[in-house]
Length: 139
Image (cartoon, rainbow, N blue to C red):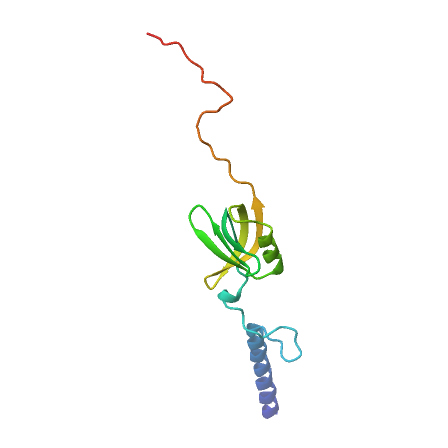
């Protein structure tokens, strides 16, 4: 009788620990639906899309290469999708463009490119519509 009780107790303790171990790993065994694949490293996660506006200084639709000069830097972009290569064919060097791109392993990949209006350049701080008013001098 003691041996049977001891066998049942050992079996229950073993099952309890096995259940806790499975719960911690997230695995449900061979019939479960959870994946036991390791999590992706940070480098393989989806790259963040960045945006910039500047002047198109070089473009080659066939090769899928473009250079855009922004206020503070020049971006060398490579287009990998057909849509991005098509958009390169619709612009010319000197156009102001908006680009969306990602950076992976130091390489800038063009996601989209569109032509935009050039920013208005002001040559004077005075408004040409309104003449300056003169005030009489006081003593």
